[in-house]
Length: 226
Length: 226
DNA sequence: CCCAAATCGGGAACAGTGTTCCCAATGAGG
DNA sequence: CCTCATTGGGAACACTGTTCCCGATTTGGG
Image 1 (cartoon, chains in turn cyan, yellow, orange, blue):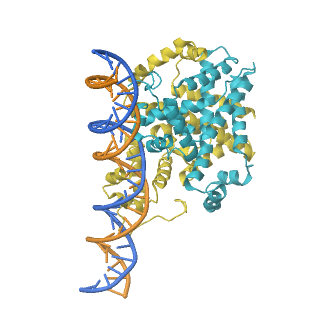
Image 2 (cartoon, chains in turn green, brown, yellow, cyan):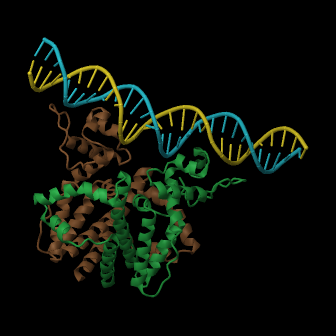
Image 3 (cartoon, chains in turn green, red, blue, yellow):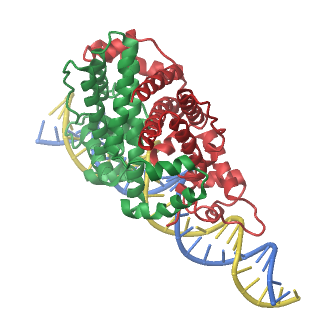
């Protein structure tokens, strides 16, 4: 059971499609229609080929998913170090978030499987380089990057959970609020959740981007300390 | 399209099974065999009933998933406030992590859908109460809880990604390391990822629990500052 | 140049999924 | 006791990932 990455690709004499073409087609489908719609037959249709031909290049659907992750990770330009660890780590975090918002299925995949493709490793390497500007301690560097990665993944997932909920039910932001609103009002009126009520009534409604930035700053504060 | 929570349950005269019984059976199946194995027919078999009878209580599979989240959230005992916001928030975070490790499918679900069940709201309320000990500013309280929640979700997901990868492929920790090892060695030997190499070779191998605790402490540090 | 052999693309089929339609049996009310 | 709504659940549909296999095509050798 070898990994996709350590196996030379299947390349026929007259090569009608390549590993990359398959992965790119899958990305296109997932971007446009969501992960649920990403079936083998759908990808094959996108390429104008037979369904089972895909299995010449790919062993599993899971392998295809691994490849997709690495394909989109190629979009992110290399992180250039400025000497300011805080600025560089922030840039890295924001770039990761932007990527995951551009491909709403990416977060879901990263949750479920460890990413080991070359582009994933490249970005990991860049992030570690940025953190190495802060401290020579390799263990601390690893901890810092883990922390930031975890936060980005969690924050974006929560954000996507809402977006995807809309897309799946076909409801707009407005319709969704309208359908949930009464329930929330009822909950608040019950008086059983006073702090939750206060949160809904009194807290400023921040953008997802603002929330993300706030959390990231707090994390960077904490990182700087120890 | 009303929510599950604002709809009175389907309760027949002679009630052979309740909403809760269905949800609990689903939880049992998911705990034992994973989310993939959680099919309607499987749940029905668990209950010894016909498959389509489930649809008397539940509208969708998605509704069932929402119910499952709330069922397990009931396990967590109420968070008692000690007056020390830092200790209370840490306790809350660790409790959430423990719950998600006990039910490995929970993280995946929370990533994909916003949780609005009564038990979810209760815990949200408790967390907000803990953070309210730090500051009277409702917006800041919301930001703090969002940050912590995001981190817990992200950290546990990464942890579960590995565990689930083992379970899915049926490989043990040992076998997995053995199958990935050569690829990693090759990557390191290539010299293209120096910081990644340093990370693998020099950084101490921390437990997931240790990593989680480290990140959480940094976050609490940052929260205390501003 | 021609034929044999290896390679390639992809159709058919299988076991499984969520969900809808509908029908038979059951129990309550008059 | 009979009527009739209520309830459980079987059959069927349109899908899914994947394996097996076969016909077509291209290549290498004589």
